[in-house]
Length: 188
Length: 420
Figure 1: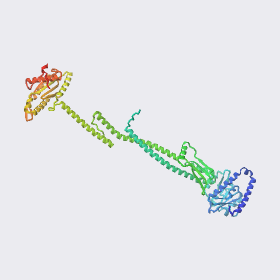
Figure 2: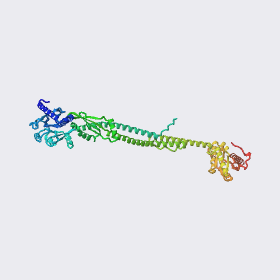
Figure 3: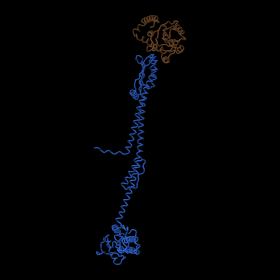
Figure 4: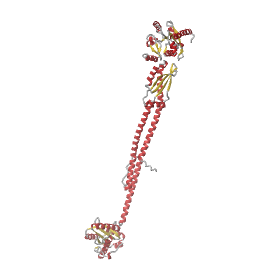
Protein backbone atom coordinates (compact mmCIF):
# COMPACT_ATOMS: atom_id res chain seq x y z
CA UNK A 1 0.00 0.00 0.00
CA UNK A 2 2.72 2.39 0.85
CA UNK A 3 5.95 2.73 -1.00
CA UNK A 4 7.87 2.87 2.25
CA UNK A 5 6.62 -0.44 3.42
CA UNK A 6 6.70 -2.31 0.18
CA UNK A 7 9.80 -4.39 1.09
CA UNK A 8 8.03 -5.51 4.19
CA UNK A 9 5.05 -6.27 2.05
CA UNK A 10 7.11 -8.45 -0.07
CA UNK A 11 8.58 -10.36 2.86
CA UNK A 12 5.11 -10.49 4.29
CA UNK A 13 3.73 -12.13 1.19
CA UNK A 14 6.55 -14.60 1.26
CA UNK A 15 5.67 -15.50 4.85
CA UNK A 16 2.08 -15.63 3.97
CA UNK A 17 2.71 -18.03 1.13
CA UNK A 18 4.72 -20.11 3.54
CA UNK A 19 1.91 -20.01 6.02
CA UNK A 20 -0.64 -20.93 3.42
CA UNK A 21 1.50 -23.78 2.30
CA UNK A 22 1.93 -24.88 5.87
CA UNK A 23 -1.78 -24.75 6.42
CA UNK A 24 -2.37 -26.64 3.26
CA UNK A 25 -0.04 -29.34 4.47
CA UNK A 26 -1.13 -29.39 8.11
CA UNK A 27 -4.82 -28.98 7.78
CA UNK A 28 -6.02 -30.03 4.40
CA UNK A 29 -9.10 -31.50 6.01
CA UNK A 30 -10.20 -28.28 7.57
CA UNK A 31 -9.65 -26.42 4.38
CA UNK A 32 -11.38 -29.00 2.29
CA UNK A 33 -14.30 -29.17 4.59
CA UNK A 34 -14.92 -25.54 5.32
CA UNK A 35 -12.73 -22.84 3.97
CA UNK A 36 -15.24 -20.41 5.51
CA UNK A 37 -14.62 -20.67 9.27
CA UNK A 38 -10.99 -19.69 9.16
CA UNK A 39 -11.79 -16.71 6.97
CA UNK A 40 -14.63 -15.79 9.24
CA UNK A 41 -12.40 -15.91 12.27
CA UNK A 42 -9.79 -13.80 10.57
CA UNK A 43 -12.47 -11.27 9.64
CA UNK A 44 -13.84 -11.28 13.14
CA UNK A 45 -10.40 -10.74 14.60
CA UNK A 46 -9.86 -7.88 12.19
CA UNK A 47 -13.16 -6.36 13.25
CA UNK A 48 -12.31 -6.63 16.94
CA UNK A 49 -8.79 -5.30 16.53
CA UNK A 50 -9.98 -2.38 14.43
CA UNK A 51 -12.79 -1.81 16.97
CA UNK A 52 -10.27 -1.65 19.80
CA UNK A 53 -8.10 0.70 17.80
CA UNK A 54 -11.11 2.91 17.09
CA UNK A 55 -11.84 3.23 20.81
CA UNK A 56 -8.23 3.96 21.75
CA UNK A 57 -6.76 7.43 22.18
CA UNK A 58 -3.01 8.09 22.15
CA UNK A 59 -1.40 10.98 24.02
CA UNK A 60 -0.31 12.27 20.63
CA UNK A 61 -2.61 11.07 17.90
CA UNK A 62 -0.54 9.62 15.06
CA UNK A 63 -1.39 10.74 11.53
CA UNK A 64 -1.43 7.10 10.48
CA UNK A 65 -1.91 4.24 12.80
CA UNK A 66 1.01 1.85 12.68
CA UNK A 67 0.04 -1.66 13.70
CA UNK A 68 2.84 -4.16 14.06
CA UNK A 69 2.32 -7.88 14.08
CA UNK A 70 4.89 -9.61 16.20
CA UNK A 71 5.53 -13.31 16.26
CA UNK A 72 3.65 -16.06 14.46
CA UNK A 73 -0.10 -15.42 14.37
CA UNK A 74 -3.12 -17.42 13.32
CA UNK A 75 -5.79 -14.91 12.39
CA UNK A 76 -4.08 -11.95 10.83
CA UNK A 77 -4.60 -12.89 7.18
CA UNK A 78 -7.31 -10.33 6.87
CA UNK A 79 -5.67 -7.81 9.16
CA UNK A 80 -2.39 -7.52 7.29
CA UNK A 81 -4.14 -6.08 4.24
CA UNK A 82 -4.34 -2.83 6.13
CA UNK A 83 -7.34 -0.58 6.06
CA UNK A 84 -8.59 2.88 6.75
CA UNK A 85 -10.43 3.84 9.89
CA UNK A 86 -13.83 5.45 9.74
CA UNK A 87 -12.21 8.75 10.61
CA UNK A 88 -10.18 8.51 7.46
CA UNK A 89 -6.93 7.64 9.23
CA UNK A 90 -5.06 4.86 7.47
CA UNK A 91 -4.01 1.81 9.41
CA UNK A 92 -0.62 0.59 8.26
CA UNK A 93 0.15 -3.01 9.16
CA UNK A 94 3.66 -4.46 9.21
CA UNK A 95 5.23 -7.57 10.54
CA UNK A 96 8.17 -7.21 12.86
CA UNK A 97 10.37 -9.62 14.68
CA UNK A 98 9.96 -9.82 18.41
CA UNK A 99 13.48 -8.57 19.07
CA UNK A 100 13.22 -5.73 16.58
CA UNK A 101 15.01 -2.86 18.34
CA UNK A 102 12.77 -0.10 17.04
CA UNK A 103 9.39 -1.49 17.97
CA UNK A 104 8.57 1.34 20.33
CA UNK A 105 9.14 4.10 17.83
CA UNK A 106 7.86 2.19 14.79
CA UNK A 107 4.56 1.00 16.22
CA UNK A 108 1.49 2.59 17.82
CA UNK A 109 -0.02 -0.82 18.41
CA UNK A 110 1.35 -4.34 18.47
CA UNK A 111 -0.51 -7.53 17.71
CA UNK A 112 1.37 -10.26 19.50
CA UNK A 113 1.29 -13.79 18.24
CA UNK A 114 2.86 -16.83 19.81
CA UNK A 115 6.08 -15.87 21.55
CA UNK A 116 8.29 -17.59 24.02
CA UNK A 117 8.15 -16.35 27.58
CA UNK A 118 11.54 -14.75 27.15
CA UNK A 119 10.58 -12.95 24.03
CA UNK A 120 7.37 -11.76 25.62
CA UNK A 121 9.02 -10.39 28.70
CA UNK A 122 11.68 -8.65 26.65
CA UNK A 123 9.05 -7.19 24.38
CA UNK A 124 6.91 -5.91 27.24
CA UNK A 125 9.94 -4.51 29.04
CA UNK A 126 10.80 -2.49 25.98
CA UNK A 127 7.22 -1.28 25.76
CA UNK A 128 7.11 0.00 29.35
CA UNK A 129 6.57 3.73 29.56
CA UNK A 130 5.57 4.06 25.91
CA UNK A 131 2.06 4.60 24.63
CA UNK A 132 1.78 1.40 22.65
CA UNK A 133 -1.44 -0.56 22.54
CA UNK A 134 -0.76 -4.27 22.76
CA UNK A 135 -3.13 -7.03 21.78
CA UNK A 136 -2.32 -10.67 22.42
CA UNK A 137 -3.77 -13.29 20.16
CA UNK A 138 -3.56 -16.02 22.76
CA UNK A 139 -5.71 -15.47 25.80
CA UNK A 140 -3.70 -17.67 28.16
CA UNK A 141 -0.91 -15.17 28.55
CA UNK A 142 -2.98 -12.14 29.20
CA UNK A 143 -2.14 -11.74 32.84
CA UNK A 144 1.21 -10.30 31.91
CA UNK A 145 1.83 -7.07 30.09
CA UNK A 146 -0.64 -7.07 27.22
CA UNK A 147 -3.49 -4.54 27.28
CA UNK A 148 -5.96 -6.73 25.38
CA UNK A 149 -6.13 -10.47 24.98
CA UNK A 150 -8.29 -11.98 22.26
CA UNK A 151 -10.35 -15.06 22.78
CA UNK A 152 -11.09 -16.47 19.42
CA UNK A 153 -14.08 -18.77 19.47
CA UNK A 154 -16.16 -20.39 16.78
CA UNK A 155 -19.11 -18.08 17.38
CA UNK A 156 -17.31 -14.85 17.97
CA UNK A 157 -14.12 -13.21 18.95
CA UNK A 158 -14.09 -11.76 22.41
CA UNK A 159 -11.39 -10.03 24.41
CA UNK A 160 -10.17 -9.28 27.88
CA UNK A 161 -8.65 -6.11 29.18
CA UNK A 162 -5.76 -5.85 31.56
CA UNK A 163 -6.75 -2.69 33.35
CA UNK A 164 -3.38 -2.26 35.09
CA UNK A 165 -1.57 -2.42 31.80
CA UNK A 166 -4.05 0.00 30.26
CA UNK A 167 -3.46 2.41 33.12
CA UNK A 168 0.30 2.11 32.80
CA UNK A 169 0.51 2.36 29.03
CA UNK A 170 -0.83 5.88 28.74
CA UNK A 171 -3.20 4.83 25.93
CA UNK A 172 -6.76 5.74 26.87
CA UNK A 173 -9.46 3.22 26.10
CA UNK A 174 -13.10 4.22 25.84
CA UNK A 175 -15.06 3.02 28.91
CA UNK A 176 -17.68 1.18 26.86
CA UNK A 177 -14.96 -1.12 25.56
CA UNK A 178 -13.74 -1.72 29.09
CA UNK A 179 -17.31 -2.44 30.13
CA UNK A 180 -17.75 -4.83 27.22
CA UNK A 181 -14.63 -6.73 28.17
CA UNK A 182 -15.31 -6.79 31.87
CA UNK A 183 -18.80 -8.18 31.30
CA UNK A 184 -17.25 -10.77 29.09
CA UNK A 185 -14.36 -11.76 31.31
CA UNK A 186 -16.20 -14.17 33.62
CA UNK A 187 -18.02 -15.71 30.70
CA UNK A 188 -14.84 -16.57 28.84
CA UNK B 1 -103.69 6.27 15.16
CA UNK B 2 -101.73 9.02 16.72
CA UNK B 3 -102.20 9.46 20.39
CA UNK B 4 -101.92 13.08 21.40
CA UNK B 5 -98.62 13.72 23.08
CA UNK B 6 -98.94 14.42 26.76
CA UNK B 7 -97.91 17.92 27.68
CA UNK B 8 -94.56 17.89 29.45
CA UNK B 9 -94.50 19.27 32.94
CA UNK B 10 -92.46 22.30 33.85
CA UNK B 11 -90.36 19.99 35.98
CA UNK B 12 -89.45 17.71 33.11
CA UNK B 13 -88.78 20.63 30.76
CA UNK B 14 -86.46 22.39 33.18
CA UNK B 15 -84.82 19.16 34.30
CA UNK B 16 -84.22 18.02 30.74
CA UNK B 17 -82.86 21.43 29.77
CA UNK B 18 -80.39 21.46 32.62
CA UNK B 19 -79.37 17.89 31.98
CA UNK B 20 -78.79 18.42 28.27
CA UNK B 21 -76.83 21.59 28.94
CA UNK B 22 -74.65 19.89 31.52
CA UNK B 23 -74.05 16.80 29.37
CA UNK B 24 -73.23 18.82 26.26
CA UNK B 25 -70.86 21.07 28.21
CA UNK B 26 -69.10 18.17 29.90
CA UNK B 27 -68.88 16.14 26.71
CA UNK B 28 -67.51 19.02 24.67
CA UNK B 29 -64.99 19.96 27.33
CA UNK B 30 -63.86 16.39 27.96
CA UNK B 31 -63.66 15.41 24.32
CA UNK B 32 -61.68 18.49 23.37
CA UNK B 33 -59.41 18.11 26.40
CA UNK B 34 -58.90 14.43 25.69
CA UNK B 35 -58.12 15.14 22.04
CA UNK B 36 -55.64 17.84 22.95
CA UNK B 37 -54.16 15.59 25.62
CA UNK B 38 -53.77 12.72 23.18
CA UNK B 39 -52.11 15.01 20.63
CA UNK B 40 -49.72 16.39 23.24
CA UNK B 41 -49.05 12.95 24.64
CA UNK B 42 -48.41 11.62 21.15
CA UNK B 43 -45.72 14.24 20.61
CA UNK B 44 -44.13 13.40 23.95
CA UNK B 45 -44.40 9.65 23.37
CA UNK B 46 -42.64 9.96 20.04
CA UNK B 47 -40.00 12.15 21.52
CA UNK B 48 -39.60 9.67 24.35
CA UNK B 49 -39.27 6.83 21.88
CA UNK B 50 -36.55 8.71 20.05
CA UNK B 51 -34.73 9.32 23.32
CA UNK B 52 -34.98 5.65 24.19
CA UNK B 53 -33.65 4.73 20.77
CA UNK B 54 -30.78 7.16 21.22
CA UNK B 55 -29.85 5.82 24.64
CA UNK B 56 -29.99 2.26 23.28
CA UNK B 57 -27.87 3.51 20.46
CA UNK B 58 -25.14 4.80 22.77
CA UNK B 59 -25.25 1.74 24.93
CA UNK B 60 -24.99 -0.86 22.19
CA UNK B 61 -22.55 1.09 20.04
CA UNK B 62 -19.44 -0.74 21.30
CA UNK B 63 -21.23 -4.07 21.20
CA UNK B 64 -22.15 -3.49 17.56
CA UNK B 65 -18.63 -2.39 16.72
CA UNK B 66 -17.29 -5.59 18.23
CA UNK B 67 -20.16 -7.58 16.76
CA UNK B 68 -20.99 -8.77 20.25
CA UNK B 69 -24.53 -10.10 20.12
CA UNK B 70 -24.72 -11.09 23.80
CA UNK B 71 -23.59 -7.68 25.05
CA UNK B 72 -25.97 -5.96 22.65
CA UNK B 73 -28.88 -8.12 23.79
CA UNK B 74 -28.05 -7.48 27.41
CA UNK B 75 -27.80 -3.73 26.97
CA UNK B 76 -30.97 -3.72 24.89
CA UNK B 77 -33.06 -5.57 27.43
CA UNK B 78 -31.59 -3.46 30.25
CA UNK B 79 -32.97 -0.30 28.70
CA UNK B 80 -36.01 -1.54 26.86
CA UNK B 81 -37.52 -3.47 29.74
CA UNK B 82 -37.81 -0.35 31.89
CA UNK B 83 -39.12 1.87 29.12
CA UNK B 84 -42.28 1.98 27.08
CA UNK B 85 -40.94 -0.23 24.37
CA UNK B 86 -42.74 -3.15 22.83
CA UNK B 87 -39.93 -4.33 20.63
CA UNK B 88 -36.36 -3.27 19.98
CA UNK B 89 -33.94 -4.66 17.45
CA UNK B 90 -30.29 -3.98 16.69
CA UNK B 91 -28.88 -4.68 13.25
CA UNK B 92 -25.29 -4.56 12.19
CA UNK B 93 -23.98 -2.72 9.14
CA UNK B 94 -24.89 -5.54 6.76
CA UNK B 95 -28.47 -5.64 8.09
CA UNK B 96 -28.01 -8.81 10.08
CA UNK B 97 -30.02 -9.01 13.30
CA UNK B 98 -27.59 -8.65 16.17
CA UNK B 99 -29.88 -8.33 19.15
CA UNK B 100 -33.60 -8.33 19.75
CA UNK B 101 -35.83 -7.64 22.67
CA UNK B 102 -39.60 -8.20 22.67
CA UNK B 103 -41.82 -7.25 25.57
CA UNK B 104 -43.47 -10.36 26.95
CA UNK B 105 -47.20 -10.52 26.29
CA UNK B 106 -49.23 -9.74 29.37
CA UNK B 107 -52.73 -10.39 28.17
CA UNK B 108 -55.43 -8.32 26.57
CA UNK B 109 -54.24 -4.97 27.79
CA UNK B 110 -50.84 -5.16 26.14
CA UNK B 111 -52.48 -5.95 22.82
CA UNK B 112 -54.72 -2.93 23.22
CA UNK B 113 -51.66 -0.85 24.08
CA UNK B 114 -49.84 -2.14 21.01
CA UNK B 115 -52.81 -1.40 18.78
CA UNK B 116 -53.09 2.07 20.28
CA UNK B 117 -49.39 2.74 19.76
CA UNK B 118 -49.61 1.55 16.17
CA UNK B 119 -52.61 3.78 15.57
CA UNK B 120 -51.18 6.90 17.16
CA UNK B 121 -47.41 6.76 16.83
CA UNK B 122 -45.21 6.76 13.78
CA UNK B 123 -43.41 3.50 14.21
CA UNK B 124 -41.16 1.73 14.17
CA UNK B 125 -38.50 4.28 14.87
CA UNK B 126 -35.27 3.62 13.05
CA UNK B 127 -31.96 5.13 14.01
CA UNK B 128 -28.49 4.47 12.60
CA UNK B 129 -25.71 3.52 15.01
CA UNK B 130 -22.74 5.75 14.33
CA UNK B 131 -19.18 5.03 15.29
CA UNK B 132 -16.56 7.59 14.36
CA UNK B 133 -19.03 9.20 12.01
CA UNK B 134 -19.81 6.02 10.16
CA UNK B 135 -22.88 3.84 10.25
CA UNK B 136 -22.04 0.56 11.89
CA UNK B 137 -25.60 -0.64 12.36
CA UNK B 138 -29.15 0.44 13.01
CA UNK B 139 -31.81 0.28 15.70
CA UNK B 140 -35.52 -0.34 15.29
CA UNK B 141 -37.73 0.53 18.22
CA UNK B 142 -41.46 -0.06 18.51
CA UNK B 143 -43.17 1.71 21.38
CA UNK B 144 -46.18 0.49 23.27
CA UNK B 145 -48.95 2.90 24.27
CA UNK B 146 -49.07 2.13 27.96
CA UNK B 147 -49.18 5.71 29.10
CA UNK B 148 -51.46 6.61 26.18
CA UNK B 149 -53.88 3.92 27.23
CA UNK B 150 -53.66 5.01 30.86
CA UNK B 151 -54.32 8.58 29.81
CA UNK B 152 -57.28 7.58 27.66
CA UNK B 153 -58.71 5.35 30.36
CA UNK B 154 -58.32 7.97 33.05
CA UNK B 155 -59.78 10.53 30.65
CA UNK B 156 -62.72 8.23 30.07
CA UNK B 157 -63.15 7.72 33.80
CA UNK B 158 -62.93 11.47 34.26
CA UNK B 159 -65.59 12.00 31.62
CA UNK B 160 -67.88 9.46 33.24
CA UNK B 161 -67.38 10.90 36.71
CA UNK B 162 -67.76 14.48 35.51
CA UNK B 163 -70.85 13.55 33.54
CA UNK B 164 -72.44 11.87 36.52
CA UNK B 165 -71.47 14.72 38.81
CA UNK B 166 -72.72 17.43 36.51
CA UNK B 167 -75.90 15.53 35.81
CA UNK B 168 -76.51 15.33 39.53
CA UNK B 169 -75.73 19.03 39.96
CA UNK B 170 -77.94 19.89 37.00
CA UNK B 171 -80.85 17.94 38.42
CA UNK B 172 -80.29 19.47 41.83
CA UNK B 173 -80.21 22.99 40.39
CA UNK B 174 -83.23 22.21 38.25
CA UNK B 175 -85.10 21.05 41.33
CA UNK B 176 -84.14 24.20 43.20
CA UNK B 177 -85.12 26.39 40.29
CA UNK B 178 -88.31 24.43 39.95
CA UNK B 179 -89.16 25.04 43.56
CA UNK B 180 -88.69 28.75 42.97
CA UNK B 181 -91.03 28.58 39.99
CA UNK B 182 -93.63 25.97 40.83
CA UNK B 183 -94.24 26.97 44.42
CA UNK B 184 -95.53 30.44 43.50
CA UNK B 185 -97.36 28.96 40.51
CA UNK B 186 -99.00 26.33 42.66
CA UNK B 187 -100.12 28.85 45.24
CA UNK B 188 -101.33 31.07 42.40
CA UNK B 189 -103.28 28.15 40.96
CA UNK B 190 -104.72 27.27 44.37
CA UNK B 191 -105.81 30.84 45.00
CA UNK B 192 -107.28 31.11 41.50
CA UNK B 193 -109.13 27.84 41.96
CA UNK B 194 -110.50 28.91 45.33
CA UNK B 195 -111.59 32.23 43.87
CA UNK B 196 -113.27 30.54 40.92
CA UNK B 197 -114.96 27.61 42.62
CA UNK B 198 -115.69 28.97 46.08
CA UNK B 199 -115.88 32.70 45.39
CA UNK B 200 -113.20 32.97 48.04
CA UNK B 201 -111.62 36.34 47.35
CA UNK B 202 -109.98 36.68 50.76
CA UNK B 203 -106.95 34.55 49.96
CA UNK B 204 -103.84 36.14 48.56
CA UNK B 205 -100.83 34.78 46.69
CA UNK B 206 -97.71 34.90 48.93
CA UNK B 207 -94.71 36.88 47.62
CA UNK B 208 -92.32 34.89 45.38
CA UNK B 209 -88.53 34.99 45.05
CA UNK B 210 -88.50 35.40 41.28
CA UNK B 211 -89.31 38.95 40.21
CA UNK B 212 -91.62 38.07 37.30
CA UNK B 213 -93.58 35.58 39.34
CA UNK B 214 -93.77 38.03 42.21
CA UNK B 215 -95.15 40.75 39.96
CA UNK B 216 -97.58 38.22 38.48
CA UNK B 217 -98.62 37.27 41.98
CA UNK B 218 -99.05 40.85 43.11
CA UNK B 219 -101.00 41.69 39.94
CA UNK B 220 -103.15 38.67 40.57
CA UNK B 221 -103.63 39.80 44.17
CA UNK B 222 -104.64 43.25 42.97
CA UNK B 223 -107.09 41.63 40.55
CA UNK B 224 -108.47 39.53 43.39
CA UNK B 225 -108.83 42.67 45.48
CA UNK B 226 -110.74 44.36 42.68
CA UNK B 227 -112.90 41.31 42.22
CA UNK B 228 -113.54 41.18 45.95
CA UNK B 229 -114.52 44.85 45.98
CA UNK B 230 -116.69 44.30 42.93
CA UNK B 231 -118.26 41.25 44.52
CA UNK B 232 -119.02 43.03 47.78
CA UNK B 233 -120.31 46.02 45.87
CA UNK B 234 -122.59 43.74 43.88
CA UNK B 235 -123.68 42.01 47.03
CA UNK B 236 -124.53 45.24 48.81
CA UNK B 237 -126.28 46.46 45.68
CA UNK B 238 -128.25 43.25 45.62
CA UNK B 239 -129.06 43.58 49.25
CA UNK B 240 -130.15 47.17 48.75
CA UNK B 241 -132.30 46.17 45.84
CA UNK B 242 -133.78 43.26 47.75
CA UNK B 243 -134.47 45.57 50.68
CA UNK B 244 -136.00 48.11 48.40
CA UNK B 245 -138.18 45.46 46.85
CA UNK B 246 -139.53 44.29 50.17
CA UNK B 247 -139.59 47.51 52.18
CA UNK B 248 -141.29 50.82 52.16
CA UNK B 249 -138.85 53.58 51.44
CA UNK B 250 -140.59 56.19 53.57
CA UNK B 251 -141.02 54.40 56.87
CA UNK B 252 -138.44 51.70 56.39
CA UNK B 253 -141.10 49.10 57.23
CA UNK B 254 -141.58 45.94 55.18
CA UNK B 255 -144.17 46.24 52.40
CA UNK B 256 -147.25 44.24 51.66
CA UNK B 257 -145.46 41.52 49.66
CA UNK B 258 -142.96 40.96 52.43
CA UNK B 259 -145.70 40.89 55.03
CA UNK B 260 -147.68 38.35 53.06
CA UNK B 261 -144.62 36.16 52.65
CA UNK B 262 -143.96 36.24 56.38
CA UNK B 263 -147.60 35.59 57.09
CA UNK B 264 -147.62 32.52 54.87
CA UNK B 265 -144.57 31.13 56.64
CA UNK B 266 -145.95 31.97 60.08
CA UNK B 267 -149.24 30.25 59.29
CA UNK B 268 -147.43 27.19 57.98
CA UNK B 269 -145.31 26.80 61.09
CA UNK B 270 -148.27 27.63 63.34
CA UNK B 271 -150.30 24.90 61.68
CA UNK B 272 -147.55 22.41 62.44
CA UNK B 273 -147.26 23.15 66.16
CA UNK B 274 -150.86 24.16 66.70
CA UNK B 275 -150.17 27.74 67.63
CA UNK B 276 -152.11 30.88 67.19
CA UNK B 277 -151.22 33.85 65.06
CA UNK B 278 -152.80 37.32 65.18
CA UNK B 279 -153.06 39.76 62.33
CA UNK B 280 -153.77 43.37 63.25
CA UNK B 281 -155.03 45.74 60.58
CA UNK B 282 -154.22 49.39 61.41
CA UNK B 283 -155.62 52.46 59.72
CA UNK B 284 -155.01 56.08 60.54
CA UNK B 285 -158.24 57.87 61.30
CA UNK B 286 -157.32 61.41 60.41
CA UNK B 287 -154.63 60.95 57.86
CA UNK B 288 -156.51 62.51 54.98
CA UNK B 289 -157.25 65.62 57.06
CA UNK B 290 -153.62 65.98 58.10
CA UNK B 291 -152.54 65.61 54.52
CA UNK B 292 -155.02 68.22 53.41
CA UNK B 293 -154.39 70.68 56.25
CA UNK B 294 -150.65 70.39 56.85
CA UNK B 295 -149.36 69.14 53.52
CA UNK B 296 -147.83 65.93 52.31
CA UNK B 297 -144.63 66.50 54.27
CA UNK B 298 -146.65 66.48 57.46
CA UNK B 299 -148.49 63.36 56.28
CA UNK B 300 -145.16 61.65 55.67
CA UNK B 301 -143.92 62.69 59.12
CA UNK B 302 -147.08 61.28 60.68
CA UNK B 303 -146.62 57.99 58.83
CA UNK B 304 -142.99 57.72 59.99
CA UNK B 305 -143.98 58.53 63.58
CA UNK B 306 -146.81 56.02 63.55
CA UNK B 307 -144.51 53.36 62.18
CA UNK B 308 -141.95 54.04 64.90
CA UNK B 309 -144.52 53.99 67.68
CA UNK B 310 -146.16 50.80 66.49
CA UNK B 311 -142.78 49.15 66.15
CA UNK B 312 -141.94 50.20 69.68
CA UNK B 313 -144.95 48.37 71.12
CA UNK B 314 -144.06 45.03 69.58
CA UNK B 315 -141.84 42.15 70.53
CA UNK B 316 -138.65 41.53 68.59
CA UNK B 317 -140.15 38.70 66.54
CA UNK B 318 -143.34 40.49 65.68
CA UNK B 319 -143.69 42.24 62.36
CA UNK B 320 -145.21 45.53 61.36
CA UNK B 321 -145.61 46.36 57.68
CA UNK B 322 -146.98 49.29 55.72
CA UNK B 323 -149.53 47.87 53.34
CA UNK B 324 -150.03 51.14 51.52
CA UNK B 325 -151.27 54.70 52.16
CA UNK B 326 -152.08 54.98 55.83
CA UNK B 327 -152.74 51.29 56.34
CA UNK B 328 -150.45 49.16 58.49
CA UNK B 329 -150.51 45.51 59.41
CA UNK B 330 -149.02 43.75 62.40
CA UNK B 331 -148.24 40.06 62.65
CA UNK B 332 -148.06 38.62 66.15
CA UNK B 333 -146.59 35.16 66.04
CA UNK B 334 -146.70 33.16 68.18
CA UNK B 335 -149.75 34.35 70.07
CA UNK B 336 -150.63 32.68 73.34
CA UNK B 337 -154.02 34.27 74.01
CA UNK B 338 -156.47 36.41 72.08
CA UNK B 339 -156.33 38.91 74.94
CA UNK B 340 -152.64 39.47 74.25
CA UNK B 341 -153.53 40.76 70.80
CA UNK B 342 -156.16 43.06 72.24
CA UNK B 343 -153.74 44.31 74.87
CA UNK B 344 -151.09 45.08 72.24
CA UNK B 345 -153.73 46.85 70.15
CA UNK B 346 -154.63 48.94 73.20
CA UNK B 347 -151.00 49.82 73.78
CA UNK B 348 -150.65 50.84 70.13
CA UNK B 349 -153.79 53.01 70.34
CA UNK B 350 -152.51 54.52 73.59
CA UNK B 351 -149.14 55.31 71.98
CA UNK B 352 -150.93 57.67 69.62
CA UNK B 353 -152.01 59.96 72.49
CA UNK B 354 -148.81 61.95 72.28
CA UNK B 355 -148.92 64.63 69.56
CA UNK B 356 -146.68 64.17 66.55
CA UNK B 357 -144.27 66.89 65.59
CA UNK B 358 -144.56 67.75 61.90
CA UNK B 359 -142.57 70.17 59.70
CA UNK B 360 -143.80 73.74 60.06
CA UNK B 361 -143.20 73.67 63.80
CA UNK B 362 -146.64 72.26 64.58
CA UNK B 363 -147.88 69.18 66.28
CA UNK B 364 -150.74 66.99 65.22
CA UNK B 365 -152.68 64.30 66.95
CA UNK B 366 -153.76 61.17 65.19
CA UNK B 367 -155.49 57.99 66.16
CA UNK B 368 -155.59 54.47 64.83
CA UNK B 369 -158.44 52.05 64.29
CA UNK B 370 -157.33 48.45 64.66
CA UNK B 371 -158.98 45.26 63.45
CA UNK B 372 -157.82 41.97 64.89
CA UNK B 373 -158.05 38.56 63.23
CA UNK B 374 -156.71 35.44 64.85
CA UNK B 375 -155.62 32.21 63.21
CA UNK B 376 -157.18 29.71 63.20
CA UNK B 377 -160.31 31.34 64.67
CA UNK B 378 -160.95 33.91 61.91
CA UNK B 379 -159.38 32.32 58.91
CA UNK B 380 -156.85 29.73 57.82
CA UNK B 381 -155.25 31.51 54.86
CA UNK B 382 -153.42 34.83 54.67
CA UNK B 383 -156.15 36.25 52.47
CA UNK B 384 -159.01 35.34 54.78
CA UNK B 385 -157.11 36.48 57.82
CA UNK B 386 -156.25 39.84 56.25
CA UNK B 387 -159.79 40.28 55.07
CA UNK B 388 -161.14 39.45 58.49
CA UNK B 389 -158.78 41.94 60.12
CA UNK B 390 -159.66 44.54 57.51
CA UNK B 391 -163.35 44.03 58.12
CA UNK B 392 -162.86 44.21 61.88
CA UNK B 393 -160.92 47.48 61.43
CA UNK B 394 -163.81 49.00 59.49
CA UNK B 395 -166.15 47.87 62.16
CA UNK B 396 -163.97 49.49 64.80
CA UNK B 397 -163.82 52.67 62.73
CA UNK B 398 -167.60 52.69 62.49
CA UNK B 399 -168.07 52.17 66.21
CA UNK B 400 -165.58 54.72 67.41
CA UNK B 401 -162.50 56.20 65.89
CA UNK B 402 -159.32 55.25 67.73
CA UNK B 403 -160.71 51.91 68.88
CA UNK B 404 -160.16 48.31 68.26
CA UNK B 405 -162.34 45.47 67.18
CA UNK B 406 -161.72 41.77 67.00
CA UNK B 407 -163.15 40.00 63.99
CA UNK B 408 -166.28 37.88 64.25
CA UNK B 409 -165.79 34.25 64.85
CA UNK B 410 -167.52 33.33 61.62
CA UNK B 411 -166.52 35.72 58.92
CA UNK B 412 -169.53 36.37 56.61
CA UNK B 413 -169.35 36.76 52.94
CA UNK B 414 -170.48 40.39 53.32
CA UNK B 415 -167.40 41.12 55.41
CA UNK B 416 -165.03 40.01 52.71
CA UNK B 417 -164.06 43.17 50.95
CA UNK B 418 -160.94 43.17 48.94
CA UNK B 419 -158.66 46.10 49.08
CA UNK B 420 -156.10 46.63 46.57
